[in-house]
Image (tube, rainbow, N blue to C red; front, side):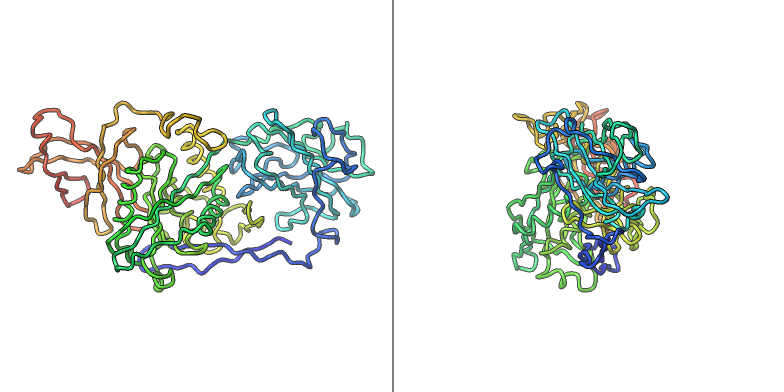
Length: 547
């Protein structure tokens, strides 16, 4: 019987709130029976039929192939269902709904369809994985169960299921699946009970992702005199890591905690103070000089408990929506940091915005992704938690970038996250293990733009439209992405002494955002006037910002 999921009550406030979500799992019904009426737990092993340890799968003799049973589909679950074979044909490249991630654990499900006249019987499925790059070959995996009818997504006992560890899925891995039986036919012949049908091996088409690195900044809240800090115990850091690893298409996730950092201004449930603390965390990331693939996450505890902070609804987090992969200096977010899964779910949501994801259309979210393909912010396909070993039904599951219950990740969001994670990893030269090359600096392999200004200046647009400076950035690359805004640099008399272009990156849950612009205008005429500008006027914003 398929495990189902229920969700925590969604919390909303009168402002658009980034609330927290989690999916809890109802454990498997102990009385459930398999389609054949037998034990619903199948026998899966990595040995040869005589009980000895399996040798190289390419050298192990083939077993007799079952008659009257067809492989109808093969799907890989690493977060979302990705069909790799359907109706006897391989699904490859852009025809797939999401990538297969190399070096990430997976569940492989083999779906079958009995021919007319099929009689219920015991069948063993064999999964063979072969890689030229592997130092040792993965043993043949076998799953034996009684089959009486066609497989369905809803019934996990109607499919042959193989848990595959990360080491068995390098980028060059190939596979073969065969349905076998003691009274089967000669395996040297082509058969619909095997894929590929001729007994060769097919590429799984796994793609290299990378490691997602998050540094939690415990914000010491001093506005109320408490000096309160969020939960950054190892148990809570493990919750963060597990939630991120389950939902993000990464080979690995690293979550560490920085030393506490003091904050003296008020942070309110209605969103007050969120943009200011986010700006400060962004500057802190710059000051700490971390690698481009590191995301800073300011964990907040503005009240003694989450229930006290969010008793009437609340903004639970804030991030800029960073739509460009090269804008590393905005890889910062903030969110509530209380004990439990809610805060971990908030992190996954907010860091998703820092990966360029807009909101899914669910629960009244603003700033919705117009390209999101599923009505109501649903996940679209079956989901699977590789750590909890549980499924998420597309009829009830909703995308983590929305505001609804039964939260998981859609294949749409999963695919987009893969593109960003892999691009960020590549930009800093991560190896396939997610590490930087030996002796390399964090930015050693970055594509440096020699035309980038030496310094960029950041301005924040608060939720009330007010402007304030947010520090300077040592730019490795010229800014890109975001919305372009004209910036006029003004002299003491209000005269225009130069113009430049700013890049505006909006917030996810509140009005406003971040502007990144050159620190000074380029010197085209009066050099002294250019150097001595006194204010800026930004397109679309009434307030001038003094130097």
